[in-house]
Image (cartoon, rainbow, N blue to C red; front, top):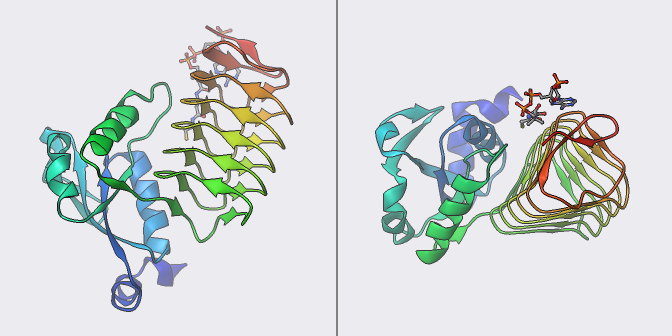
Length: 228
Ligand SMILES: CC(C)(COP(=O)(O)OP(=O)(O)OC[C@H]1O[C@@H](n2cnc3c(N)ncnc32)[C@H](O)[C@@H]1OP(=O)(O)O)[C@@H](O)C(=O)NCCC(=O)NCCS
């Protein structure tokens, strides 16, 4: 994949593909992974990153933090699409705040799928969602607004992922699983087919969920037990 990362490829893709301008909201670790997805596709050209005021002027890979999140509205007026690239494990507070700010300013959310991922033609993916490298979203699956389907995650047929949820690296939602809103499914967790997971639940890494989870909380283990 040397070509995909080379400056020559970056110039080529900007010259020969019709690309939309994109501003990233958040310049941490998740943003670095998302940048790799953006650079391997041909849909968007990153114009800059918006982050906290004290980080303005810093660099994230090849891109600058150009402004603070108080000024999102100003960037909406300059015909950009936006992607929320703040990560999410314990709390969705920052991601939901940025989404609210963006909605109020009437900003446009991008939707991003890695060319190395597979999204079935029979699946739907909401605004602001990202499907990272080697992920699979299978037939009839529904992925909500601002969801992260992280690297190598699997969302099997007929599964549902609610808004602002994060299916993290290598996690597996089997057929017909329904995950609520603002849920975090830890790395390599597996959810048995047909299981329902309520809103605001955190599932620990490597957990196996074989019963519906109806209460918000943190669940870990094989099979899953409530931690708190
Ligand atoms: C579930 C999680 C959030 C809990 O974190 P925490 O509240 O700091 O929990 P602690 O590390 O204090 O552990 C508390 C107890 O739960 C157990 N535990 C924590 N996570 C566990 C897991 N994933 N599976 C099994 N047991 C787990 C610990 O062994 C400990 O047990 P003990 O009380 O018997 O010693 C965290 O362990 C986790 O799994 N995070 C997700 C990491 C991940 O997937 N990152 C991907 C980023 S893309």
